[in-house]
Image (cartoon, rainbow, N blue to C red; front, side):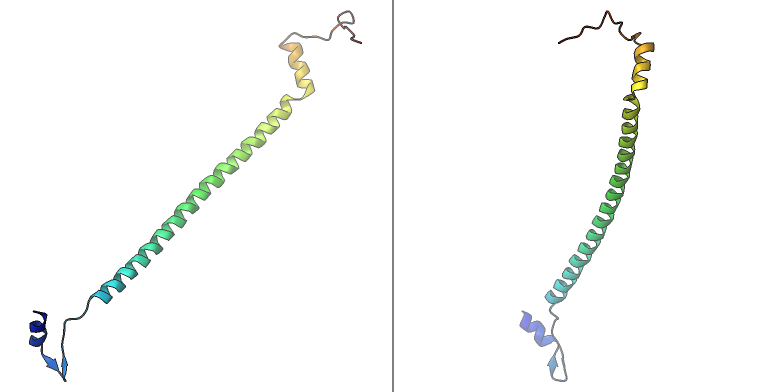
Length: 105
């Protein structure tokens, strides 16, 4: 059947016109499409990762600030003057008298 179609096509300057082979063209277009899609996918991934990194860096800055604040608060809570003030005012504690002190040898 293909011979009948090829014979029916006209000849130009001694060359017979024939149906073009589309397989290489379609293969090239498919390859070009895959490369383009890979490029777009990789750019989307990079943009997504940059956004995620920005969020994580922001969270890290916040956590470092919180750690600094907690360290400052811990230092203020360990202050001996503050501990003595709380012991005297809130817990009604006082220094022991000499009769209350027991020396252990």
